[in-house]
Length: 191
Length: 202
Image 1 (cartoon, rainbow over the protein chains, first blue to last red):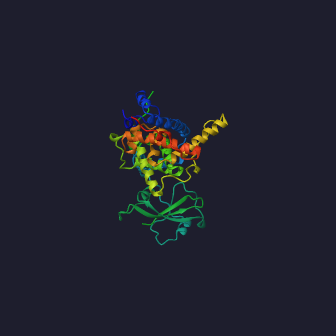
Image 2: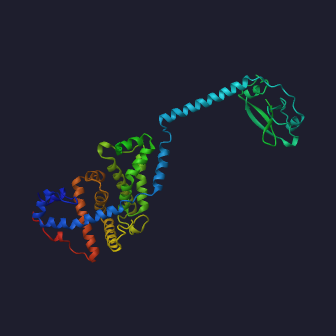
């Protein structure tokens, strides 16, 4: 074994038995080995001292955010299925509630309260104000707010008003009288 | 008792969107990568950036890890090294001016029970730390990887993109350079090392 072969094979911190013969026969390599030996020991000391050093927690926090951003669209299959079941159940509940509401007999039409009519004061008086079920007593003229909204066409029949067949619109415009307590008192359909 | 998952298994799971696998791999490999970047750059903020970038690379669509070409740990160190080289090129300087002064650079005392021994030990370790960081880059990286982080020679060779024999010879050369630097620091002069004076007879 020559010196080059020796150093290519034996750069570890401790020489193996097989290599002792070369060190014994070569003073140059023995001197090189001796020079490197205390450094290897000190390096182990430095390694031990550094052992507990690691990146600050903010690095992990940033990476976890990046990970969630990267895999946001990838939802594990089981969770995805559960989510779709929840959506389907919600749709069924809403449809059932609407169906039950439509089957109930329509309340009798009540003539518009003079106060309500006065509050409206609009030119688009296609229908009279219909008091909403469970609404509190008629508020004073100056106690109400008039709010214009869009409602689904099915809401007309639910309140006992005949829906006109002219118009294919899914929604109708309406004015709602809102009392000082924030509760809707009456509604009037405009078209 | 269940055996811990391999790096490769964690990698497969993290790529499938399992965050716990990503966090587990991060906890397992981050400290060594951070210390490697810290010892190479001498800068805590740089080490932080490098650690972050290494793990972000795992999230990219075109992540270049190929298990057939080497272990995941070698791949991670390889990325860290490339990022550090880029950083060095930007700074146009291989060795920082005052590496030790930065946040997170110094560790706790080694032995608090004997103050004098502790002081001597700390001085030795600090001198060695300075010597390591002043090594030329190709020697520093093998010392940090093999001696300080105890990465085996084959993985170090894969991370550095060189044969194992080169790692071995650089490592020994690096230790000799360190010994020389420490001797110079102790004696305040550049003496000729004993191993240079002798002639190889075989």
